[in-house]
Image (spheres, rainbow, N blue to C red):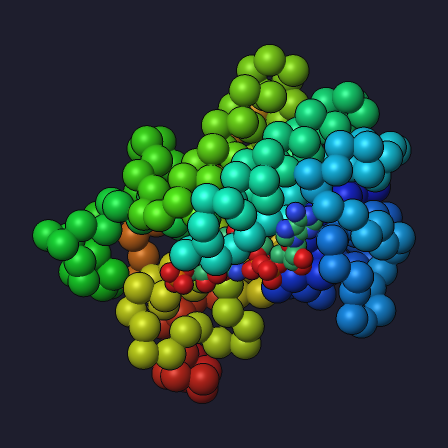
Length: 253
Ligand SMILES: NC(=O)C1=CN([C@@H]2O[C@H](COP(=O)(O)OP(=O)(O)OC[C@H]3O[C@@H](n4cnc5c(N)ncnc54)[C@H](O)[C@@H]3O)[C@@H](O)[C@H]2O)C=CC1
Ligand SMILES: O=C1O[C@H](COP(=O)(O)O)[C@@H](O)[C@H](O)[C@H]1O
């Protein structure tokens, strides 16, 4: 069971979702290149994940890592995703192995499989009555260079698992939106991930027993084109939210 957890990208949105529910559950070491703008639990390390010495130092005494740091922009250029998302992720896995960390949960993205959303399938696949599902066993089909960088992070995880027995869960996060699902955006509603489901899913990633997994990070939405069965079965993910229970920003169920 994880006790000391390193959270990279802690000052960002996903980090905030994770900490909002799990602040008291672990001994946190938070890492981000930007200092926090609010009080956060645990020790805060201001460092860049491409700085091998700093990441190695931050990894000492850590049981599990939730690795979120990176450039999250879908239009991010290669000059940014190469160091921040690909090389930085390699540095995190490498330091984790060196420090004897058990588990790394990696924030991958829906954009790693964006090109499954073909003209023939959309917008039908975003709707409740459509049965098309991606389940994590399919090959990546990135929709942009950002998606390529996330697929690379998944592949690096595969290597560090096979070569060094590190447990790695890659979470292809959908659309994390605070409070309510995205409004007037069918695709976003189909891949909505609520803040509390996000925290719960990453908690399951650092508590469950597995080897290497790719799962989808969405709530239990009626509309969906990502299966959450693998996350349920292997990780014990039990999401509480569903975008169908909302009309705009009003909860109707
Ligand atoms: N928010 C969402 O809906 C989704 C997010 N993701 C992934 O989740 C992760 C977190 O995303 P968000 O919280 O939304 O983004 P964000 O931009 O709010 O947070 C990312 C954090 O990482 C830090 N960071 C970036 N590069 C860094 C580096 N080289 N060294 C140290 N810190 C660095 C930033 O300072 C920032 O605080 C990203 O990897 C993103 O690709 C994936 C799918 C959906
Ligand atoms: O990977 C990411 O995906 C989300 C959702 O994608 P979108 O195409 O619906 O915007 C995006 O908001 C987030 O910034 C990105 O990191």
